[in-house]
Image (cartoon, rainbow over all chains, first blue to last red; front, side, top):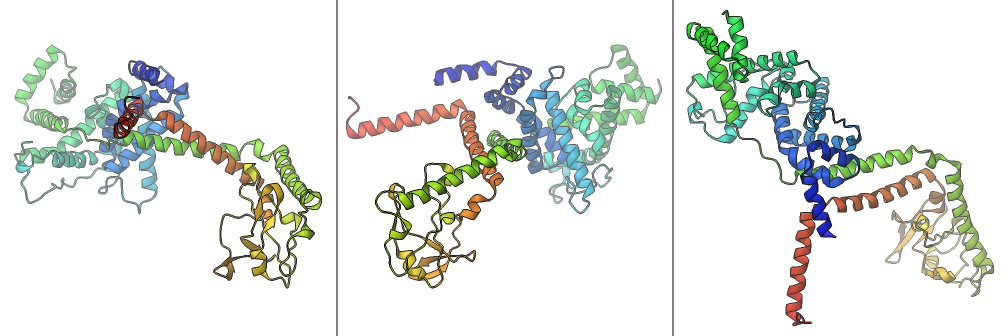
Length: 209
Length: 268
């Protein structure tokens, strides 16, 4: 019995993402496990850079996978599975942002700054007592990057993160966000400039990461 | 080349989508324009920094958390679908529940009135005033899960000693004997004996016949939840990864071997 199960699982692992989600739609839960394992890290990192904290990112990632499972029968093979998953996740982030804006007493997802608005305040170094040229810890660098990305307005941030962190093509980003290709390019470039302006002062201080 | 065109080409260069000819033109422009040079340099260095950050690590139990969340979500959906189906609201269902309850009461009353072993309301062993079991308050433990939560109750008569009633054991034939755990005062409260002292019975495990009769929909929802929980449990079991199952099996084999070695039975 277990030999058959192992064979089946081995067969599933050879399937593409699109074939796996179709298996899930037929009720094959093993296919879903494989998809989660394949995409969990990528999805989590996208969401982490979008919302700025691990807990929210993990929760939204879980929710995205659950929605993908429940609506597996609605997946159409005209789009890549990854694009579909990012679409679900992006919509979840948008909904969160909107609900946070409607409840201004709540802290923003970033904990500082205001969502959707440019924040020109300089980045706080994790340890102000140490000069930026002494910052070499990966954790501190990650935190700095997070703060810098947080300063990018939300409508530019999505495309920027999908491009620079998740390495999606412009076409995939357009499909995931529902934007035109030209709009995606424009937003990514604007975001790059925001990011540059935030990080450049650190670089000019002689930071060598 | 003007700066506007140059900036567009800088982005193309970053994306690796610049034509060779444009690249040469851009390099010439950047060499002559400090503003564009600063922009190109800044973009290149900042994005290079971004790309050097290691990906964040994820909790190793993430997949399990997704499964649990999925099981909860499906449970919720199952509950919602049951409460909204016409099956719950159908007259056939209500009739079935009412008919079953009535049947049980009829059987119980008929048995006690005409059944063997002389067990009837009038022949119960007396200790003080005879206890009267009101038919409409009587339900029995049967195999049906529907009535598993029901319990025997006795309706206290004015003047009767509740302590005496709580000490009495009743013989209900094939349903076994029963010593009342609580006594209903008939005023919505019930009393239970604890260390010889009567106090209010706040135990949630007993349902009055009134509670049994009411809320067919709640009962249906409860069964749907029970069925759904069992299905959920089965499905979760199936979703356990084969590797884990294999590990467990391996561990079981190791344990078995250890036990066999300990008893010297390995060669048998």
